[in-house]
Length: 270
Length: 325
Image 1 (spheres, rainbow over the protein chains, first blue to last red):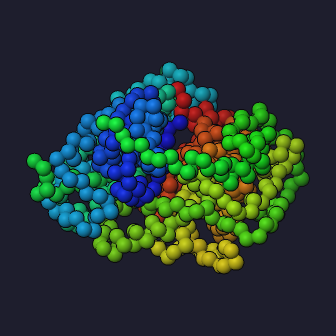
Image 2 (cartoon, rainbow over the protein chains, first blue to last red):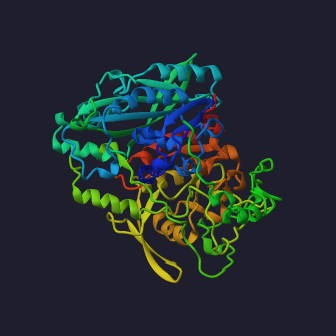
Image 3 (spheres, chains in turn red, yellow):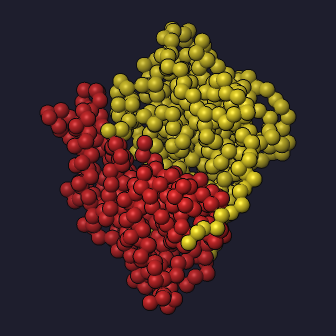
C-alpha cells in the first residue's frame, strides 16, 4: 500500500529533536531499506529533506538515542522509500550542501538570507485507480501497461495537450511560481520509480535558485516552505480505450514541495 | 570507527501500555490474549455477510453515544497527550498574492503549532494511562457488529466510513482563525471551549455523499468531544452512525478501524481517512486523503466527489481501490 506522502511525523518535532540530540546518535546510521543496506552519517541528517527524514524515522529519533541503527545488526528497517531514491538523494541532494553551512528552520528569524541559494525539493506520489466499463476488475496486463505508460510520461507539469484535464495544473499561479523558482515548464522528473507491485509511482526533482534573483516579497512567501513542506493534491480523470473497451483512469497526484537554505555564501568553505 | 553505545534505557523494561492491557481484554481482535503478553493481532474470523433482514421502516436518525452503554469510573480523560501537529501549507496559499510572511505570522505559526491538538487519534507511541476504561461499545446481532442492521432507506447503498479530525474538520483550544463553531466540553470538572474549523467543501461533500452512501463517521476521538462536533457539523442529518474510540482496535499502538466488525459487506465498504494506520487491516477499501489543518485552498473533498460517484456503482470496491499488481 502506498503511503500518503504527507502523513509524516510532526516536522517541528523532528527538527527540534534532531538539533538537540544529534551528538548522541551513532556516527554512522545503518538502514535496511527494502532489503538494501544504506549508511548515512549522522551529520547529514539535518541536511536531508524533512519529507525523507519522516519516511526514514516515522516514529521520531528516540531509538537512535538507544544506539539503534549504530551497526548492521541493529539496522533501522524502512519500507516507505525506495532504496534507489534514498541513494539518489545522498548522491544528488547532499552534495549541494557539502561546502555550505546549513541553516536550521528554527533559526529562520535570525539568519540573513539575502545572499544564499534556495534548494527546492519536489516530490510526487501518484496512485492509479481503474474502473472498467463492465464493472469487472481490470486485466492485470492492462494494469501493468497503464502503469508503464504513466511511468514513461515523465513530465513534471502536465503536457500542453492535456491542459483540458486540469487547467490549474498547467496554467495556474502555482506553476508560474515554480517556474519563477527555477523549474522549467518542460522539466522531466529527475528520479522516478514504480512502487513494488503497486499501481503507484514516486517521482522527485531538485532545483536551485539564488535568493538574490527573487523579490523580497516572493522570497518571504517561498520561505514558508522551509522545513515545512507544502502540499497539493489533484484527482485527475481520463477515459481511454483499450482493446475496444473503455477504461476510466483516475490518478491521485500529490505534491510535496520543500525549501531548504543552502547557507550564506560568505560562510562557504570553498 | 566504533560507535559509542548508550546505556540501555529503562523504557526497554516498560510494561505493556494501558491500551495494550485494556484492548487485550476488551477488543474482540485480541481474543484469548493474556494481559501479561504483548498483544498481537489475530486475523478476524471469516467475514459474514450482514443478514438481509427487512426492518420496519423508522425515522432516520443518528445513534448518539448517549444511547450506548456507558460505565462511569470517575473523571474522564478526553484527549490523548497532545501531539504537536504541523500546520498544513498549501502550495497555492504559500504563493498567493495576499500571502506574506512577517514576524507576526511567524509567531502565530508557532502558536498555531502549539495549539493544534490531536483529539485522541494515533499516538506515535503506546502511552501508559491510569485513566478509567473506555465506555463499552454497543454491539448488534449475533455477529456482535458495531452497526445495527442497515436501514431500509439505505438498502442497496454502499457504506462510506469517514474519519473526523484532520479529514473533515480541525479543532483547537486556542483562537487562531475564525472558527466555524465552538463546542464546550468538560474535562476533569472544567469547561473548555474547542474551536472547530470545517474543511473546505465539507458541507457539500456530506450532502452529496449522503445521497449515495450510508455514511458512518468513525473516529478515534472520545465521544464527549466528537458527538457535539458532529451535532453541529451534520446539519443535513446525513450521518447515519457514529463510532468512537471504544470501537477502535489497538494494534501496535495505533487505533485501527476494523471494517470487518461493522456488520456490512466488505465489498461495499469504503473508508476515507488521513491516517494510513487506521485502515491497515483493509487497505483495499481505503481512499487516502491528506491531513487538513487550516488550508482554505484545499479542494480535496470536492475533488473526491466524482471519484466516489464512480465507486458507488462498482460491485466490489476493492477491485478499484486495491493498488496491488
